[in-house]
Image (cartoon, rainbow, N blue to C red):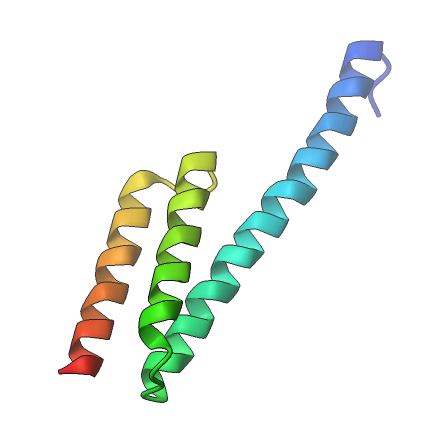
Length: 87
């Protein structure tokens, strides 16, 4: 346990940030999984879910939750799966 006042305050801030980051990561993963299940099930809503998932991945990358290269890789893979499903 921290004893110095600034360390105590920083510990509280870290807890808040951890909750916020975990929530945003969870939201991103959920939207991506919804897209994946829609593509697998050949659902017509897959295109709309792709837009939502792509946006969630971009938002996570902009917040620093995932790296930019991972965001680009994930979006590329999702786009390829969508194109393959539509073909």
